[in-house]
Length: 245
Image (cartoon, rainbow, N blue to C red; front, side, top):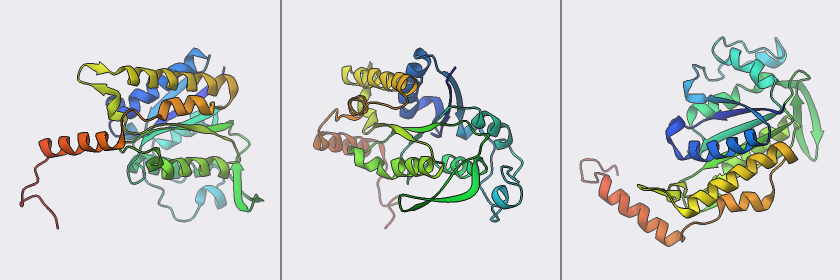
């Protein structure tokens, strides 16, 4: 069975927009016969990578010197065929998600390669991960606002010498639903996310037209910006006592 390790980096965990998109995506994976292992970064008691000595490469290759809950996660990561990183766009990532990505270093072999004009490494022999995919949501209108997050995950895949299997991106994610539930457009987005999950397992990557269906505009930029700013004006206190100049 195809094993998928999904790491959900949103501090909102099950309650946020990233969870909605990720749930649809993972349901497609299970429908295609995949076995999903889902982890919430915010529930892990882990430390930032702070040894400053690359202990996991040069002292004890493959072993992290920090003894926390990452120690229990490493065997599960090594056993996965596909790694899925799910995160909202912050500046650029939520802090715990960045900590967790940094702590993936012990999975890499401490031998360098030169490939296509870049220094690269690769996963250790005991790591089964064959591909890395991204699921991400953002509040701003344009998909380009997610470019930095896509770059981070693509570079992680390149540095580990495995394919980047694609990015399931949903800009202005909050437009998918109202107080009454999901809009018709929102349901179509989630259906496309499910198809992307099925494709990841059955084909090893996601089709460009499926990813485009997930990220297509649901509203004009002007209308979304007006909606957002009206909401800010109604809900945020902007008197002189709270302004910072």
